[in-house]
Amino acid sequence: MKMKKYMLGIITGVVIFLLAACGSDPRKDFTKELLSSKGDDYNAASFKMKINDLSYDGDEGGAYVKMIASQLKDMSIDGKYAIDDKKDTMEMEITANLFGEKLPFQFVGNKDKYYMSTSFVSGVMDLANSFNYPVELSKSDLNKLKGKYIDIAEAGDTLTSGELDKKTDPLKNKTFTNAENSKMSREIKKLIESFDKKSFTKDKDVVTHTFTKKEIIKIMEKIDEVAKEDKEYKKSGDQKEMKEAIKSLKNDLDKMDIKVSINQKTKAVDMRMALAATDDEEANMSIDMTISVKPQKNSGKIKMPSKKEIISQDDLNGILSNLTGSISDDSDSDLDLDDDSIDYSDLKDDPEIQKLMDEQLDEMIKQIEANPSAVTEENAKEVRDGAKTIFNDEQMKKLNDALDKALKAGTV
Image (cartoon, rainbow, N blue to C red; front, side, top):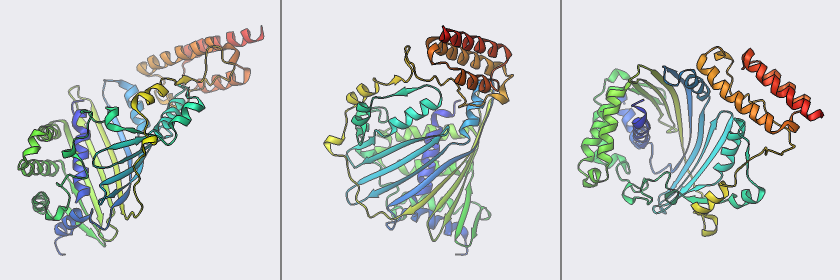
């Protein structure tokens, strides 16, 4: 879909602004809290993001895409971060809860370097195993990764230039630092307070407003307008990216609403985002998600990795190249053939799903034929029982024949 290219940038930019930052006029109460929610009293926060609903209706990808969308409905992200303004350091922990598995990510950095913990490797392995793609690392390799960090700039997957561009350092970006005193915040404050007064509400300590697509575009255009005064804005390519994001939001999204609620006492921010889009093939996609942020105080010191805790990208690649399947051709271990990580039962008669299932069945049969000694009466029965819910009669016959042949070979 056309909007995919800039969707993340649009959402991220808007969310960062909403978090950076009402009396008789709820608009003033709202903007006051919005622009002071990152005050000096709070240098840390915990956050949670959850996808409440995700749907796709189109021919591209067909039932497979619908199925994945259904699985992603349960996805959530939990995390926390802390910033030490005196030493210009930050740390962040994120746990992605995806397909019943947990993927941990840890980051730490300062004005010059950003590092990511190798703890994510074990999470990726667990996720692969949950999809019946058994992988493992030797105990020796796992020990080499324990407590290690990689230089994000060296990895090159996150930073395109290979070096950290200091002028885009989030710890040094003054656009939203001291927000209440900056021209950017004054202009945005004035703009938000010009929105319909009736759309702002106050219930006890909580002030709320739902930003519409039209309002979000106005905010982004105002940010672009004020940012032009900075000569580096255009040189860095940020202006071009902002223009493209605004264009994409106008043309590619049918709907984008962000409901923002701020607690005036705790400074907690709750957001609910609803997006809908139609692509060139008339396929419809919608997503509903919530984001909660609770500001906190952090008095602990942020520790940067020592030299011996940093592993080079080459060393990491060397270790990951040793990833192996947990079942080799001559393995005598039990064979896990019951791939129930995805429930296809609701789409059992869909032609595209059956094509996908044929491919999975072929891989399953290859595994059985390569490891006949690992097939026992017990696990064969488990496979047959589980397969009945996802395979049609013709597919079941092929699977039963393969299992019977393996069992017969094991008795010879």
